[in-house]
Image 1 (cartoon, rainbow, N blue to C red):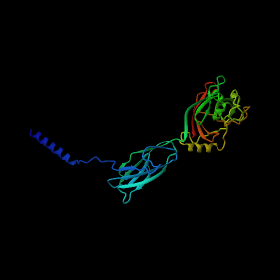
Image 2: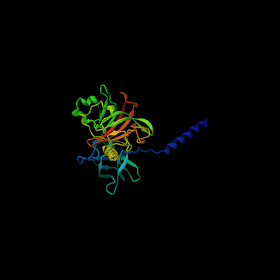
Image 3: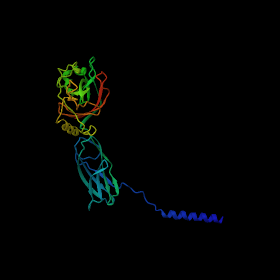
Image 4: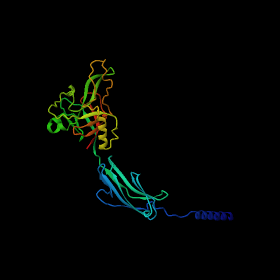
Length: 330
């Protein structure tokens, strides 16, 4: 019994000693600063806003703190884009104006003001402000172009790139004057055969401008477009820049200028009709396939990129189609 009393007393003393080793501290306040944004004019931003690419945007902000600040940062999407180092008279209250240019790429971009002390310890930050850049290009996905059909003539085999709309021969013929001028490109399956490395090969899937030279091949001669406006759209296949990297109208234009300055044609793929197996003019022939990017300059001077996403079959049959995505300058 005496031994138990001694053990209980020893345990109590140990608990008391351990408790005395811990020091009660307040939970630190990790946001001790105050940030205010001033509306000093039409270009100054104080809350979430939507802008056009390359618009001028400005921030006028004041940061106050009960303790000494050393650094004040303006961050964009979590990355520092401007740093101010505090000097005498600004350690606890600092004001500045930052003049920026909105992104050319479309999408939301977040801005925040953050302060740190001389040891680089975070003192707090403002609420985030979201600046959303509206795209300066149109983006159309999953447009399926079908081969021309000879009977009802209702297969959508023409496309207007500006609005992403597809048209059949019947659609355009219903109002030739006001509709044919909208057509940038057509699609068909070219059954011409050529020799590629001495192997007889079908030309296959073809994208063309309506001013195609020579005139429409026999595969689509049953479509009389003699009274149509025949836009001289320029096209060319090229692999760079990639379709995914095109995030602005400026990027689309730059890619179009780069690729179309030489080698632009009005029909793809390009080939030479070979009559015998011994001719080798098509040894570099490249058929249109899924993954191709076709660069375009419309008759209106707009640049575009078309990516072929899917081709369902290699045939001139009624159900043959290719699915494309389109990015074009506004």
